[in-house]
Length: 270
View 1: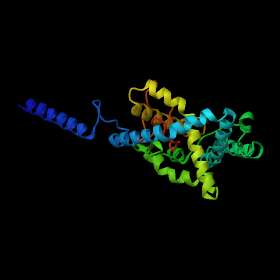
View 2 (view 1 turned 180 degrees about the vertical axis):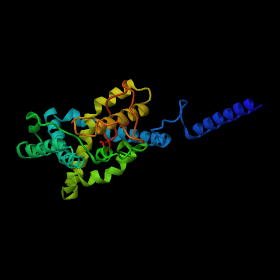
View 3 (view 1 turned 90 degrees about the vertical axis):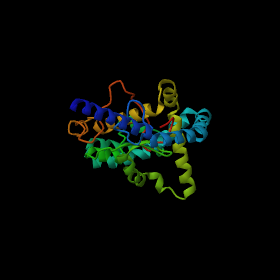
């Protein structure tokens, strides 16, 4: 009698779980522990895909076809040079002193001798680029990522990276451009340039992924974990094991690339 009661209770528990998953729109495999907001995130991702297919992607295709490669490279170099100064700040906050020195050196060399960063002189001098943002800084000091989040227009993120966005915005040198008309034009150009650089990746996702949402999510989380825990120097903490609450490692055969947080959404995709 007791065994039958246990089996009945277990069965009822499974039925209740299945009903909850159905209500939340979960798939048959159950909810992903890293993505408890999946139903909401999928809707936002669909919205971003719609905006991208109607506006950003067509503009990026025209931009790439109409703009000479040398000019596109100069545009990417210019915006990359602006990011190097913010990378210097975040590397300093993380006590990555060698990375900080190299990022500052890149900014100074390219600004002075590369026509404001249009020409990447620093790379020719073998000065390495280190992309750092405030979300990585928080992760460096043990702040857990929290749930996966898809932001309208901006794409994949985590709760930690989302909370870091206002700080990254404050550190964006484009904010210093006045008046507002050229500043808004530079914002638009940066978004189009970033999207144009992701056109090939978007095609790969379309061809390879059975579920673009899951593919993009797993790739993004793996990429962000690698950026935070990658051990580049012996005195860094980046190579340490994730603490409680951190994202667990993804399988080795997982996708390797995805857009960064805060970057414009590709399909769907800092």
